[in-house]
Image 1: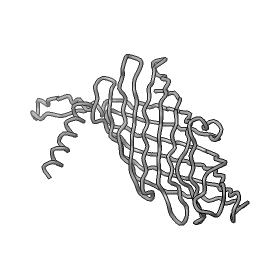
Image 2 (image 1 turned 90 degrees about the horizontal axis):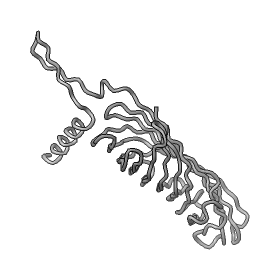
Image 3 (image 1 turned 180 degrees about the vertical axis):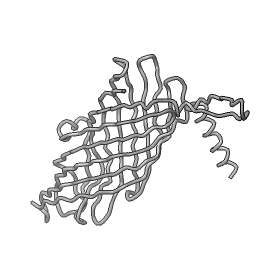
Image 4 (image 1 turned 90 degrees about the vertical axis):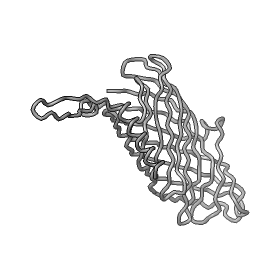
Length: 264
């Protein structure tokens, strides 16, 4: 209990010192001191960050209790097997508080995945994965333009897979299945400026819910080409382990990201 209380006090102190600089005003009639926070006076600030994600995929996919397939897409195969990928982040900030929306979509086609079991020689897998995160954040550290936020939110997944079996007892069989689920996630995200224009960015979340495990990490660099416009480049890895009613999606998607951030 003492450790929890100390951590709570420390978090409050950090939040007050970094994101909520307080001003004291005295009322001569009552002698009472009123506290006005910077957060109450700060305007809302918004940013939009569309990215292109060159995501490969590796892991296991299965459906209808058919033999699952082991998938692997190396970096050199990304442009041959990645059909389409996109991600975008929308953020609203006021003082130490923030609201974050993160969308990502990837469609990957692997022609020669390895089936588990002896019922097929090869299997082609087309995977469409959509995830949407809605989270709230609070700044626990800030120094100038550098900041570190704690975030807590919910991620919704929708995944569709199409499997085409070749050879063996299942030769010629084609099946499609999909699933939607929701996970709770928590993590950290922040920026650190190396110069007036160049900065590092990173985030990481982990959680679970209807999936056994749900995680997402990314790191990269940004450069401000104008006051409100930055170019960004980095690397992202996102993993999820979900299985229910014969549908299996235990995969890691990873690859470079290229994008921009516009603030207003």
